[in-house]
Amino acid sequence: MEINSRNKKNAGFLCCKATTNIKSNDKHINVTAWYTNEVPFNFGPKAYNGLPGLILELQEDILLIKATKISLNQKKKKLIKKPSQGEKVTLREYNAIVKEMYNSRFKRN
Image (cartoon, rainbow, N blue to C red; front, side, top):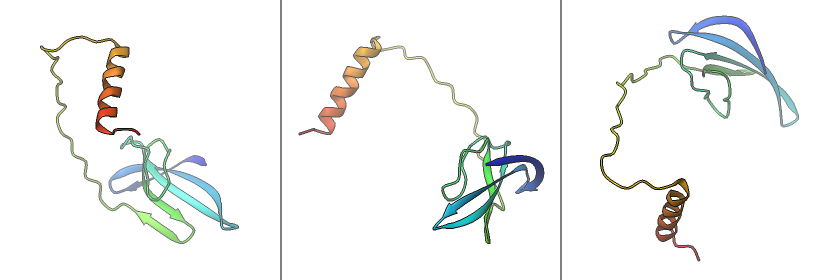
């Protein structure tokens, strides 16, 4: 995969270009992905992922998949309250408790 400095806007996000060539069914396919660092998830359409941002446009030869709108839910961060009850256990004890719960739920033969 080759990442270069070409940029363009896609669905309101600044995207970077990445290209590669894959072999499928004894045929070489040129793949171009446009991804954005502004959405820091390394996912994309089909089985493409691993770039340092969300893939918003993907072209495999003549097939083009393109995002037209991205809507992110910007929920407020939730605070996690420190428990005031219960007992402390070691990691080993915790793992034993989880294993016992798992085995009782999914009885193994």
